[in-house]
Length: 501
Image (cartoon, rainbow, N blue to C red; front, side, top):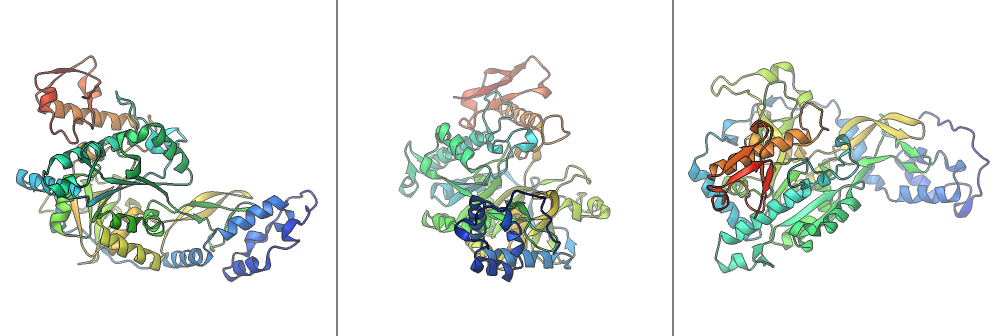
């Protein structure tokens, strides 16, 4: 290991309660895993800095971290099965669905929700850094007429679905789960990160949980892992702190298991889990149609997909790993040019066209199984990044799992096509970028809701071209365009504006 060079510092401080040398037992534990370099600056540390370093190292699960580092490094370059296009039988396309299918799935999903069988998991660990904000991304407002944040839009969609589910059945067993106000409760598990947890909790508290009951929301933090060098050694962020980073959005599985939240779901009678990312303005949280389809298919896992907009679009797509193998996601960077442009001569579609948009559904049984499998295999993706260290920024590795990693373990997976203009408007880049900006997402929502209003018999006036504006329908009025006739028929609305009760 390269010797660490330390610039001249003041004379060594008093030994403090630890003495002149690091605690022998802890030092030996670090040596067992080749990480004794974490004590390289011990002689130069002040007593309080030594205390901080000891606490930092003692907080690490060294055997687990060592297993993850070794397995992940060893997996690099390992052969993987050749990929095949997703079989047509695994995909429900928009064109294939009948109105009867959609109605049946909608009612079946609402029934399951009314029986308390669905939980929702939100991945909300990211900050809005690329949007010019240090706040949690869910706090961000994209400039809608209502000025609602992403969190509020999603909370109100849950409120709407709870109401629809309660209205869908008059059976006593459906009403036994009713919350104050006569609606069914959907429990919302929100994964934060060390960087967003406190701010997220305060945001919800200051907004009175957007009308939801505080006890139907559970916040939990994703884990972190040390950043390592190419040979697996810890990178020191400061002389008394190991550099760490969140363990990726796939860290949700370990967090749900370790914090006993899967047990919590089981105790609530949950059978199915809807999982999605925070930055999609059009996300249909707890979508009854998707849930009904999922139950109908009887699979372990499902994902909503959109068709690639064009062959070179930089999105991950679903593939089949080997003939007859599991469905999984291949990142754009893993696909060669020939793969991206291959066309299925029968359908006229790209052979690899089903884009992953982080809208997933799982059975609770599968999540219990897969969390054990992921932990046993301990294979993480290695992302080469610039890591802050005692020597300034240095090239190192962050260890991450991705939300879609679990599909490799699923014995049965179904894909459910949705229209991009109806369900996928991500907010990833600041205004001025070419795609996935607050402006582009806002326009997609306003245009969609304007179509809802016109379909319900309403009229629009506008002082700027309609393609540049539209109206916003409050999620408290309608989840997906339903039940708007009483509000809209024969009425005229001026764009931009919000339509609410």
